[in-house]
Length: 448
Image 1 (cartoon, rainbow, N blue to C red):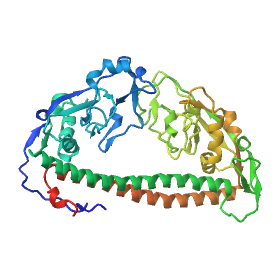
Image 2 (tube, rainbow, N blue to C red; image 1 turned 120 degrees about the vertical axis):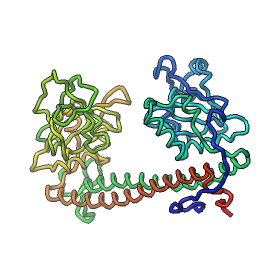
Image 3 (cartoon, rainbow, N blue to C red; image 1 turned 45 degrees about the vertical axis):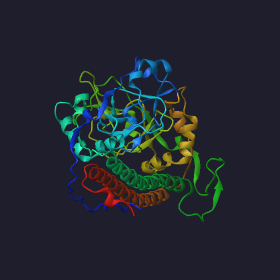
Image 4 (cartoon, rainbow, N blue to C red; image 1 turned 60 degrees about the vertical axis):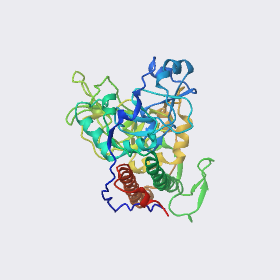
């Protein structure tokens, strides 16, 4: 139970007498790593941990997407090795200001140039400093520096000049750390449980789709064997056939050398394959067509188009969605298919849900080609040969209405949980800021 400080209760100031101190006077070292000679090419599958800014979070190190370097590169970068109790601070990019402490024990590891190592002196509790750097007063200092002359990031002098409140007594620092360790662990456990619920709700979305478009809405109707083990029985009055027999047309676009900037309204642009990564059409994923190139108007994306990624990772190839709105003058690229369906045979929105079903995904991932596991392709033949169940048009409409209703209920629950998670994160931040500035007396807030 989280009982130490109610989220609705605002901490009141207390006279702590804790002095303000610059980080540089608490540290024996402030410095970052560097890019290894050879850049990303030196990364190996297994070896010595190479910590990047994407691994440093306010709730700790996240090593699920960590890079590795070999022994020779580690020796070359020996001065960037981290030690247990080092405080790590991101000093560039969108993650600037994220910070955590290196746990103990910890394996040999290095950091790159985007991560600053703050190594504290004896008599300074590193965990207290790590918590202090997460507090709102320090985040505000970093934000002010970002908005000033250091838009590219923080330098070591600026890191060293960050001000924190620090009690002189080591046992008092330790009391704050013990309180925050306990309370943030409680909050993080609740957040993790709610995020698992969000994951389950996303899975439920997929189940709703797959069940509705492969089994229908009425479990009591007569069924028949589809003839395919991965599809199983389907309603007896449904057709099971290849998708190409419901096509009107399938085409891919054009990928000229484009600008690195996004097309402005009124300018011509070319979609990037990432516009379908989430299954929801994202038109901001485009590049401006150079003025010297003539557009191909017949490739312009239109409202109602069904788009599918032709080339992507195995998880994303074949991602499909419908264009609900467009700014105009946006062209189809050659890594996307535009699929038209016979209006008497298949509703476009129903086709999108059918192509997101487990039955379709199994075939797409099975038949995708390409030597690289990070880039797979599907041909027009692969898409056309998908074996899928098709109800009559009037039943397609009823199934769509059912999916919309179920998704609305799921979305309401997702929104409620998402708001709860945001409030818990805000409470966590408030609690840390109050404790490291002495605004609350952690001894009075301690559990009995």
